[in-house]
Image 1 (cartoon, helix red, strand yellow):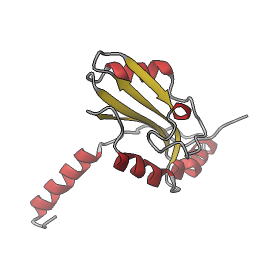
Image 2 (cartoon, rainbow, N blue to C red):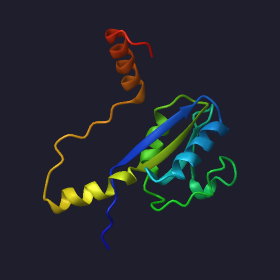
Image 3 (cartoon, rainbow, N blue to C red):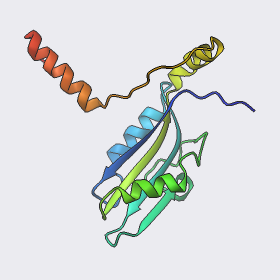
Length: 146
């Protein structure tokens, strides 16, 4: 068996609350329902006020985050060790939604690159906040209102 996934990003969203906000869960459902990305795996990590770590895999969530209706083609991709490391990086009383997201749109490109025996020499992710800040600065420099 030879899987051919596009690039995958591991995204961890931390909340200073014990539960994931419903608006965030809805946004994940909306994105997962499109064709641009595939949600491969998800988990919720909690660090209690006492520092205790709880890891909830998708099948453990029940209706708590309302994301259990999503079929995850690579459930378990994010391992316990990764999830524990994420939990240790946040303050007690924090919950973290961890998503493994495949860039589905790029599958054809990945296949073509592999067939051409080409090498990816740069792949850098620029956070949205940075892109928006640069775009705002460029608009100001050009004298065009945002």
